[in-house]
Image (cartoon, helix red, strand yellow):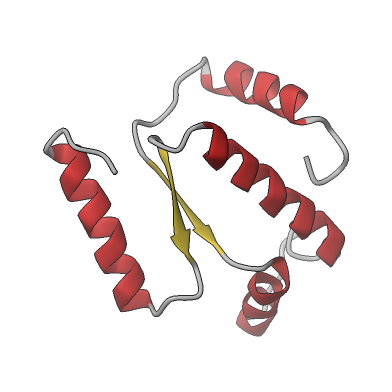
Length: 104
């Protein structure tokens, strides 16, 4: 999506690559693209994707948020700006609910 492919094409390619399998529960750790890039660059060794411009990462984030909006029961958007402990607690609560048959 970041390279200008439409979301429908990306979805078709995803279905082909996964054989249509989807996880029951997905976590999207969301944060502004600029913040994510800064964290990645602090880490050091960059991949080809890490070296992409901010605009690319902003488009990718937008696509993931659109997917999450389409499947809010399956894709849980988690605030990626929270501290790791709080993020872990939120994820733990979602997993516990999912294991007990309750979402939301």
